[in-house]
Image (cartoon, rainbow, N blue to C red):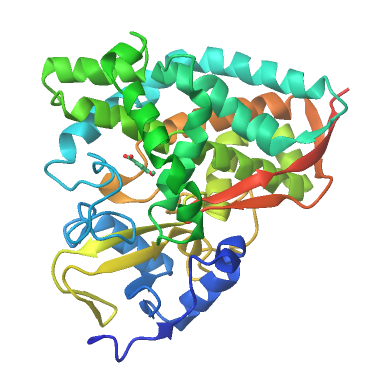
Length: 400
Ligand code: OVM
């Protein structure tokens, strides 16, 4: 490979089960090796330090998304589905869908949901507390809560909602290489895609949800009729697994940091900071790729035009050059500037939805639970992009 001679080389399979199970060690290796590291196994350049990841995310002019934000280069290979008009698009085509969704998911537009989501969180927490006090916080809280509130907010019908998590899992796997994780779901691509695509039609959606508001934007001419179902599809792709594993990150953090849980109980208004700190600390979305639009120099290394860079959000979020004691989950720090939601024009448009879910669930829990502890080793679920969970067995002590 020409142009890689002076670069530090890493031959680790960064999408191997071992690396996905325990990314922290890999992240240290990559950050230490240099600002740009050549991954020989995938023939891409990797960024793992906060400064370079942040800069690349912000530089959409030199690092485009339209060639795909996974390993596959859409200039040479076709995607498994029509590209996202948000995630996999660049200005100017990206801008209209972004504006429409930004307004629909703006904090001011979400205010009407807060009371109902607070009630749903209280009901769910009461329900899990009605048992023995031991349960799986991943399935019973982190999965259950988003599935109770988000599909209704989008305006989905009642049937087939069990497809949402498998579809998201598949979509986030698809950003990586075609490895065993991708092959394991290959037989479901057609079925899951057909269900999701069917839910994006105007007729499939209630007339008062995010989905209906997307179609209303198309009626106003703010989107084309062809873009509208794809924007709905973005909600269904990016809106469920991300929040599930983001909430799981919070619950895992508190179960392993009891003193931080006490701090939250004393000051429940820290729920929002807690969520951002958990997103920094775990980085539910670990990686995204970009493609260089020209030869781009990063820290004296040239990224040739048309080639991919792999940005390690999780490594940047624990870069000791940016964060004090980065491996500590700490509600006293200011986690702003983390890249767990990305940065720049593609920064997570749904982050206010995620924050509202986290705030309502954590507040309901903090008012009712004195103590959370793990009762067994939590289990990860492996995904090429998501830092995800299979199980978080906990015991909680109810407030008397
Ligand atoms: C999308 C999308 C946006 C963000 C993340 C993502 C699967 C998908 O627009 O479909 O991950």
